[in-house]
Length: 222
Image 1 (cartoon, helix red, strand yellow):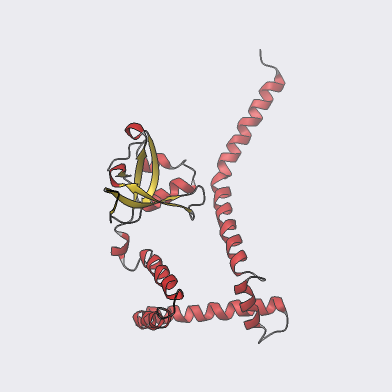
Image 2 (cartoon, rainbow, N blue to C red):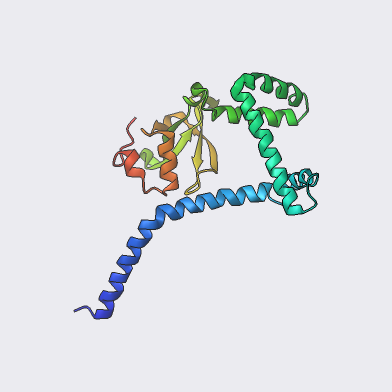
């Protein structure tokens, strides 16, 4: 017969587990937000290259470093907002052509800009055709495809390497799918996962908990 202490500990464990599961979505959400905030702080905060630039801009209006940084941030935010208004008003193509002409003529910088522009264009939802090639897929490895990896197929384009066709996929990291690895996978090892890109992100963010909602009980039908 179990002792009172054992029963009490087991009940406490169940209650603690129930509480943990109840707040886990909130914890994951807060964790991702904090990760993004920390990343932005390390990239844009005071003491960084961009942060120092914002401070110097704000020093034109205030001698206090903290106030100057805040004012510099506000000025840059206002400028970006004005550019957004101009783009929405129809100046998008004019602005792009102007920036293209300036940056593409600069060695190295032009190559970096061109690559960055292609990446941004892929995620530009104003042109849905650029997103059509991206889809969630399963990549199978090992004997009889015993191991499967959920990944994002970048495009339907195939590359011939050593006489075999490959495609590019991105394997995100969990639970923060903003990073990951880029792989060339044999085309015959790739199959549609039967879910949306949003579903793929949900699976990674939830560390697999939401997989049954999108993989239909584990059957990744094409």
